[in-house]
View 1 (spheres, rainbow, N blue to C red):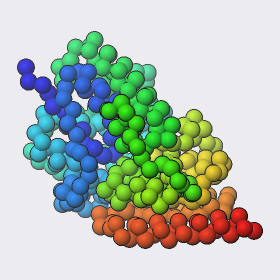
View 2 (view 1 turned 180 degrees about the vertical axis):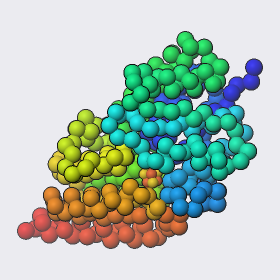
View 3 (view 1 turned 120 degrees about the vertical axis):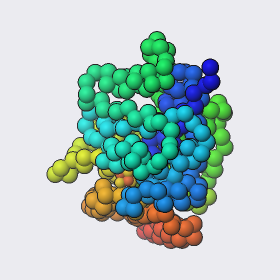
Length: 331
Ligand code: SF4
């Protein structure tokens, strides 16, 4: 019997859950195909096909789905991820993702669009994976085993993030069982890079922000590198808690970074067309100004973000932080 090929778009939750999903499908006997790194073709596809007022990450998702369609997969894994922590929900664009894909894109492979919402009771997450396994015709014993291994893979992946690696690096470590050499030495500054993982870790859309920082002698720290228990336990300081999971996490990461100290600058990487960020960015800036004198900068990426513009802004920000630091240490 031919092996079923399952396509997973390499964007959005890919950066946090791919090792888990890959392990799950492989243990069901399926071949996992990814859409690969974001490139101009994926972006152009997305801009052409997605709804005009969608944010850049959602446009990109469309591009990745079309890339996978060209690769001839049997299924596309597009789960409807609603809530994974019992407290906040993912942005509405995540909730409507399978519908948007299905109704906008024609002639695509069937979607596996299981709903993941832990508020639906004990075992809700497992049921979503069980349903996925059934779609592929797997026996229940195989699904249970695949799910257990998937959870284990995700824990190993997450412990690498907590040890300071970024998701693409952690995936490489798991894949090759070797530690890649990244330019981690000789840094004189540390910047917290806050925002959504699918913007920060996408080399193309962030115009290689993290690598640029390393090259400039700056160590980037992201929310995934912060101690997770402390991060999620940050007290709500806003009158009303931010409703969306990633926005809530970015705000809590700002709180934690300010409490722990040890960073010389904070950069909020935001996407053009993001509704939640219209509020979050201002809240983050106000919090930083109110509680510290750490320099804060917002960088907005869109489909036209260029290398030169990004580099100029980063260099100017780093220069300003170095001068400020020098002035303080001389005083
Ligand atoms: S949080 Fe913002 S960037 Fe992310 S999917 Fe929603 S609207 Fe787009």
